[in-house]
Length: 399
Image 1 (cartoon, rainbow, N blue to C red):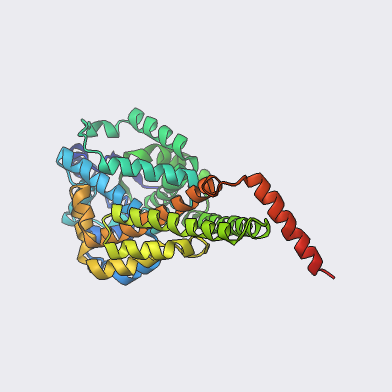
Image 2: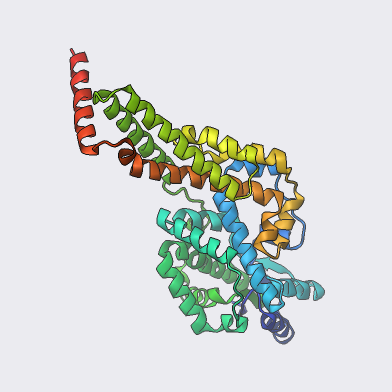
């Protein structure tokens, strides 16, 4: 087996860049392994064609896109505050390897697999908490002192990882533990083929990689680390529950004997509450009035369908007005503030769609909370009377 040296870095640290160059000079590796997958390497080298705008909009992965862009923006913002471009140490390793004509090994797991497994490992509550935390980070205008060099100290890393595990144990497994195992597996293979292997990885992975290298039998089978996941379809489950509750409410009112007027009022409240909140959130995101009008028109229907969302209908309207282009991907990544990012047409379209969906969901929640006081009726009496009468009517239809 060949000799392996691991350099743990912070992705926004000038010191890490210097450490990478020093290790290259001192260790004289036969191969350089970096914490990249082919997709991210292509982006770093500007060799990858951005996806088609139509494909992005048709994917309906609005929340996932916003999370990905927001995390990249926050990393870039930290890098700007300390005067180092995010990923500078990886770029330095690539440049040194190319200058020395050394082979470069991309040893990280496909970013799409990692994001898929991470997102689907989160519970609904964890997704909501993450969304809130990212939103607060984006709009925060306070400048905090950041000692980036502390990010490579093992005690600081351990503390940060412990906090993340408290926030989301399953998320930490997908984002950190599984990648530790995958990276260790790739590095083991390299040491079997080369005498001196230099690995450049994030400092948060060093401890986990070394544990697996010391006990290779603890590394899971490769196929268990590379498959995508399909989590519980929370949206579909919630949609079916909403449809059931609404049908139950309509049935109870229809058979309670309180009159058609109450049924009409209940339906009007459903349309207005959903429409106002969905349209209001679309405008809050910076959407065009036509997008808000579209949100108002469709949200009451989409709230009753478990497989569609109001944001799907605002996307083509907003996109026709904003006219996003493939250049927007780079503009999003290069934005220095949230305000700048929000002015990019593609980001605006996705943000409008996502917040339209949030408004519609909020409308559903508030409707069931306030509908009975708004109608001035006792829910217990309505449900017992109405559903009892409905059951009696059904029995008369049975042979």
